[in-house]
Length: 334
Image 1 (tube, helix red, strand yellow):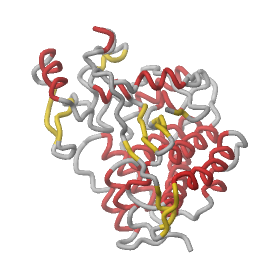
Image 2: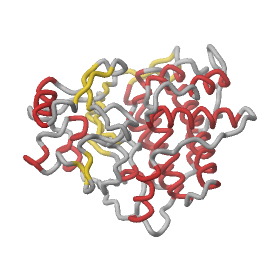
Image 3: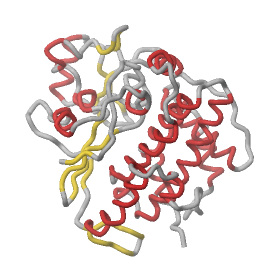
C-alpha cells in the first residue's frame, strides 16, 4: 500500500463527521447486534443506503457523540465502534500497482490546522484493518482506464500523466486551476446547470447533507446570475471548535491543493467517467469551492475556516450519487 505525501490528520473531536452529513453505515449484522445491546433504539434502516445505519438524534448528531468525543472509542479499545467510524477518514483504492490509501475532506480535523501531523503509512494502514484482520478496498481500478470516452490507456500510462500534476500541487505550490487546466461548467449531454441547481435546492429532509446540497446548488445559481440566499449552516458548532483550536490562520490555498491532490489520487472518477470528464468536474467543483468560501467570508468567517467549510461541502456532495450521476453527463473538452 501507498499513501501520498503531505497527508496531515489528527482527530481533534470537532464532531462534524459524527453527524447526519452522511449515513453512518452500512452496518454489518454483528455490528447491529452489538450496538443494539448498548441501546435497542440506536439502529435504523436507511432506504437510501439500503442498509442498517446509526439513527441520529433529533439535532442530527450521532447518539454516541458525547462532550469529550465518541463514547464508543475508549471502551474495549474502540472495538464496539462500527467499521465506517473505525476507518474514517481513510479509504483504500486497489490499483494494478498496489493499494492507494485515500482520505476524505468532509472533516475539519483533516483539512485545517497547522498542528496536524503528517500521517505515516503504517498508521493509516492500521486504521484500514478490520476486525477479521482483512483490509477491504473501497474502490478498484482496472488495468486500463478511460482517458477519454473512446480511448483507454494502460494504468501505467495514466500514472505518468498524474505524477507531474501531483508534484505541481504538492511540491511546487501550483495554482490548482492551472494544474487541472480545464474550464468549469462544461456542456451537459443531458439537462442544464440551472435545472441541476434547482433540484439540489429542493430540500427533502432536514439533514446536514441536504443543507450542503442546497448550498452547492445555490453556488451554481450564482454562476448563472442568481443570488445565494443565506441558508442554515448547521455545522457552525464544529467550526467554532476549529477557531478555538486554530487561533492563527492556516494556509487556505494549501488546503485547496491538498484536496485536489486527493481527488486525483483516489481515482474515484474511474467509476463514472473518463479522466477528461474528471478534469472538467474538478474544475467545476474548484469554482464552486471558491465561490462558497467567498460567501462564508462575507458572512464573517475567517478565510481559512471559510475554505474548510466550503471544502466540506464540495467533498461531501462531490462523492455522492447525486454528483456522480451529473459527472457522467459532462461533455469532454475539445
